[in-house]
Image (cartoon, rainbow, N blue to C red; front, side, top):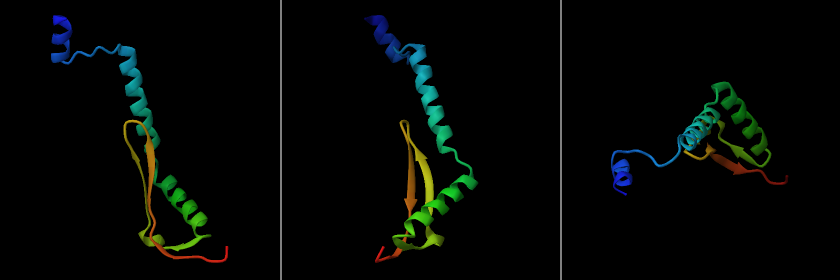
Length: 89
């Protein structure tokens, strides 16, 4: 018990090194997925504009799209100012 307590105090983990390596790899993969080239982000933005323009008039100049990641996932964040809704579709 004393050894366990000392290991915790001095930062030694009780996790096996394989489990730690797996967690680190997962974080690296998530980071790689969130690292998208500017060209891909521009194509993504254009595709989103094409789809939502069927339903609403958007302010394309002020539209912002980005990717954010945390330890477990990657999120697409879109700030899309809507000028008006399109009716009749």
